Length: 288
Image 1: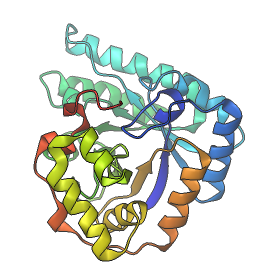
Image 2: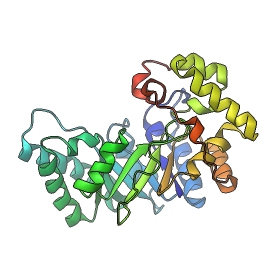
Image 3: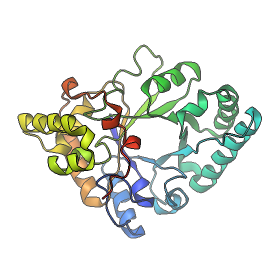
Image 4: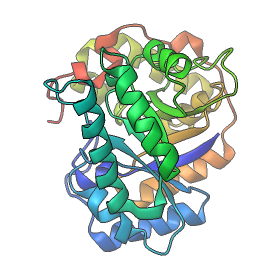
């Protein structure tokens, strides 16, 4: 498993514990340079992340990153052919912005490939991707839906959330051959797992019990939140890359240092099955 770097924080104020100010371009370049020198060679971006997709090509000019971007959710009023054409046009826009650094495109809403238009859209974008040498995949929240896409649509890669509390990603590729690429995101649950216990419970009260268990587990293992979170992730099977986002270079230094030394630790006892606790889409406004 390798680390990859998300760029949403470079275009938006993002995450429950995110920074209040966006980084200046020179600071972003410092982060990118540090990342590449420390073995992080894949970036994740999307048209929905503010203006960063359009700026990223120039920001990492001269650095041999490969970039994964997204196809936005398909408009609901398009028929099969129109939806396929719309997806291809979005793909072309990302290609023009990112050039030869574009490695793969994920449908930002995995369900777009499973719905009534899914087969037609998958066929259309698949032909475009093969012609351009771009892998096609999906970003999802539902591990079962993503597993279905690996089987029925033969997508090449996917992203799913995975962390100490949300362990549904573990085993998603069981019995699927050849193994596609599986990327883990939300390693720190948008920063919730890194906050002091009282602050975390204040932000997401419904997750109180799960967060108490998490902090007790850290105390029992004498681990910092960053070291504990990464050690659990390293124990997940078949994950090709752990995607992390940072607000500054110092955070990335802490993560890369921890990544080098932590050992895999299985912690199934922390697995939380309550969607209200582990799905940030259900938290409401927790930024204050």
